[in-house]
Figure 1: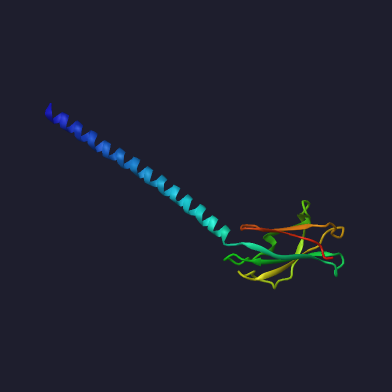
Figure 2: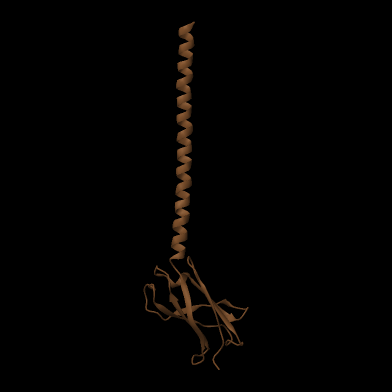
Length: 153
């Protein structure tokens, strides 16, 4: 009777160790998954923060037909922008800004950190009219900027 009790205790001890190992392995795996998700989220946030645009100046170019919006925007982030097609430009009368197609007058290639790019937005179908205008630039992944300006006298 004594040896059967000892054997059953050994079996219970071994099964407890196996169960504890399985549970601790699962906890460690889930902890690593959580850590990886947090690291990825922080990395994505850092990537977003590294592209930042600031509008230096904006005006209406009345020497073109039709008149166009001219926007001087500076990349003040740490990362260069390689694709202008992922840059949304909204321009218009204050409170009524709409998306406009634009043409980048900057050199082809990257928009390096610290460089100022000249963006032109060509309104359709009318010339811009109003007393106060606003422009908003929003990169695909990054921090955008907005700017209010008056038309030239």
